[in-house]
Length: 198
Image (tube, rainbow, N blue to C red; front, top):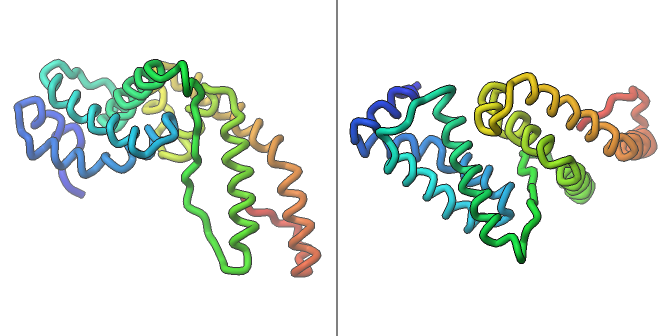
């Protein structure tokens, strides 16, 4: 569907501004959301996203693509975000990650869903930094191991290892809450199937 990212990058390298616009339309929102997980501010994220696409254009003739265009954009955005964090490190030196995953909601479970979602955010927030970054890129943004490896300058196997450890950490920290939800479901709905939903 539509022109490939690689073809668009080739057009950008030839000075085609329309190709840049198409790539921007395709990746603006994901880049903003990703940067917001690092900076904790949508306004700051939009500034960094803008800088990312400006840099893509300004350095267009120098890019030698290894991997995907998506990974290239995320890597640029991450580096610019880390630069921004260093500039404000005296006051806000901690990374805050918001897990902006879609959730299924029903009116009678809004509060429970909100509270459980907050627990998930807290659990992801408490992961060691590298595991947290891998988890967000792979499980939330859908990057492949290779793409996440390109973004974080790791090997795909190291990405796989970090993701496995992150999932184990999350299972351990959330297990008591799964148990509570399961008990609540049994007591209120008579569900004795033992199925649990994340």
